[in-house]
Image (cartoon, rainbow, N blue to C red; front, side, top):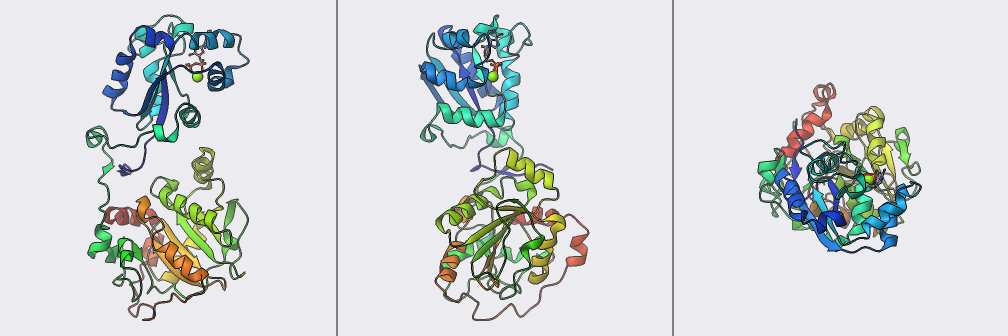
Length: 394
Ligand code: IDP
Ligand code: MG
């Protein structure tokens, strides 16, 4: 099944550059047209005359090649047209559209195959991996030059487009948030004294897990960072990501890392609740994981299930965060929608209360109506199946 995509999350980006010969020959427009016609989105473009040093940095991996001096000389012959194009598989598809490095080997129909003859005059450059694309984009463009905009054809180019979330919180604020996956929750109104804005995500101040001991964190396999011990006097944020750590969890992860940066006095651990450790490692290798955030792998969902049992629910939707006080008690939990604006809202205010020593427990006590326990049934299925439903609701 296709993963839904919200318009506020960028797709893959690649750096495409029309070399001096392409600019001189007046084929800039033709090359741009090919990327536009394909359906990719232009997010940055400029004509510029880079310095020799800049070009040497760009082509640093070819420094040892015999043709390197000639390449730099060629690239200095005139202005170049620099672009960033965005779209699913933009890097790989961009390379295919350019054709083989040597135009003699480029298939007809490709840019090089159709428009040039010699390798030393092959008119265009395209990033060869997502990693080098990111480095090249940042080498050639400042952040301010990289534009974020919604393409009106998005829904006609991609089949996995999701409407942006309503500012008013959408379903979460309208009452339908009572149902998350197959789990029915008690009404999730903010308790007295809580900020009204809390309605914009799903909070669980009246949840069965609140006030309980945080499950033992020692079962976690640390992928980066040091192991954590509950009840050591330090406040902790334990948050679960999933779905192979893809975009839905990314905003929450950034938000949590920002909190961790601001508060060295607390511990944060991001728990990858993906099925396979290799997916977690691949995510990190791709450079998509912040290196400064402790990351752990919850093998066989031992911890996820422990939290789920405390919550007395059938499934733990991700992303999901728990706030643990210095004594090791769960004091707050919160599930998130994908929107960045919701990533840490409310949770951060609660953290500040906990750090100030305030009691944030629900004055009404835990939810008096125990939720239907669907644990058995869900355990035998992919827990993320439940999250699919939750995503659709959020
Ligand atoms: P790419 O541009 O397809 O990624 P690279 O191997 O990264 O190819 O080489 C960068 C550029 O260096 C090529 O686009 C081409 O302009 C130039 N180049 C590569 N190989 C040769 C060569 O054998 N002789 C002269 N120039 C070369
Ligand atoms: Mg290259």
